[in-house]
Length: 66
Image (tube, rainbow, N blue to C red; front, side, top):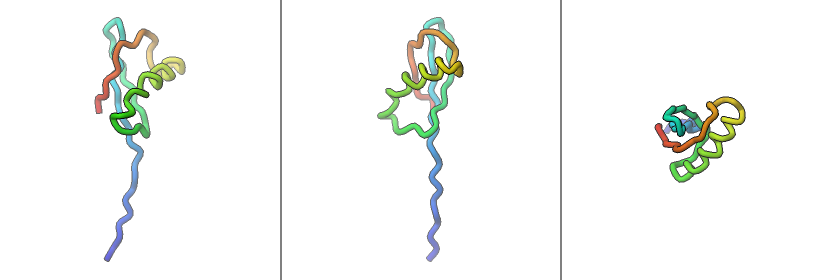
């Protein structure tokens, strides 16, 4: 019998980042865990803002998109 090796791909999750002024940005987190770890998205979004990847502004909500 043949054994197939299953390739494990890192899971990427997309989040919609909503700002106080009505703008929406998107953030993709590679290797993110399950929905129980979505609380980490806010700190990741703030790190991305500091790095200049996400626009500056007050974040009001972060929602998992896919």
